[in-house]
Amino acid sequence: MTAITRPGLAPAPTAPAPVTVAGPVTQARVVRAELTKLRGLRSTWWCALTAVVLIVGLGAIIAGSGTPYHVSPGNTAAAGASGALLGVLFAQLVVGVVGVLAFSGEYGTGMIRATLAVVPARLPVLWAKLIVLAGLVLPVTMLCAFAGFFAATAIESSRGGSAITLTDPGVLRTVIGSSLYLTVVVIIGLALGALLRKTAAGLSAFAAVFFVLPIVTEALPHAITGFAPYLPSNAGGELWGLSVTSAHALSPWTGFAVLCGYAVVLTAAAAWRLRRRDA
Image (tube, rainbow, N blue to C red; front, side, top):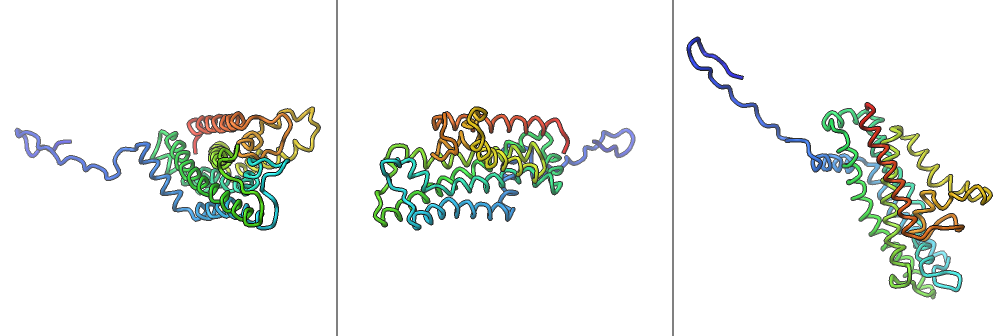
């Protein structure tokens, strides 16, 4: 834009428009914004605290109650380690809730409209939430898994049981696998929240897949439950040593690959709907 002072004179240039403080929208900026939103929610801190108590405290409580973790003829070291990490079975519900609420909560409050107005490409929002949640859950649950394992085995050792160490066969994989399992679980929860957009629907779907279906399939005749080892909780549970089903169980890393497959498919479906449907 220019301004003309009077006829016959050259136009006088106007002052350039000021540069905005925020700058262009980049993936890194979207990640920082999502991290700020996640840290600002009290539910995030309460869920994180609950997960820590479940993973670390439940194993220690069971060990203190006299339930044996030690190695015996029918109890391998890896099975003992998974028993020490029994809290993961309940912590998965907590991280699933965090994942679902990360998207459905914004749809419920209407904040998603402002988010997508700032980031019209939409998909960077999904990737940012995924990065933030995985970056939070993985290190926190990894520390909790090691702390819970050492606490439970120390209590068991003080009671006269045979100590389980990380060098025993399958133990280190079980401890690390519990954290990897919970990280993929929160991604599945996030995908369900983005796909269904309703908190009640997302939580119901998560609970049905991870808690109801494994129990129901165990009560049905084996002839019609051949898919049971491929359920997300059963497949992923093989990695950290606690699966509901024992018939035709998958190997630990094969089961984890199946669990990751569910996460990829659901995330792709969530990305498709985010691009195709309005908020």
